[in-house]
Amino acid sequence: MKTELIAETWDALGSAQREFVEAFYRRFFERYPDYRPLFPLELNPRHLEKMVQTMALVANLSDDRSSIAPHMHKVGQAHKAYGLTARDFDNFKRTFLELLGERLGRKWSAEAEKAWNDAFDAVLVPLMREGLGRQ
Image 1: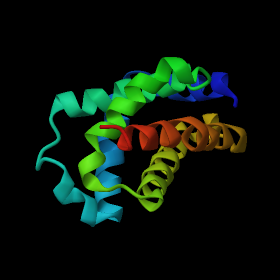
Image 2 (image 1 turned 180 degrees about the vertical axis):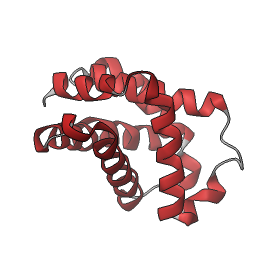
Image 3 (image 1 turned 60 degrees about the vertical axis):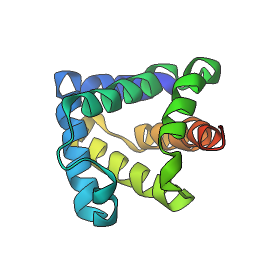
């Protein structure tokens, strides 16, 4: 996995990371309105900041499963009540990567997209799924 490229592309958002997360949720809910009722009417700053922190963790530690696993397990446990499926994770990933590519413009490449896909498929989603299975 090209972890340096993942970190580089996330860091390229700079101070716009929170704005990116807000835009992500807007697009996600527009594209998949059935998810909207699962979230508070207004996403509070704490929720948005948690997402920024989680993605920063993924960007910086995706090659070290032992460091990121406790956090991602916790995220998975927090989503257990929703009965998430592979399709749900794919919807999230597809929207996230599409918007990330748009926001990064020329800094986004096929190589960066592959690196992020690998991070989702090899680390993020499997660790969340492990968390879903925990008590």
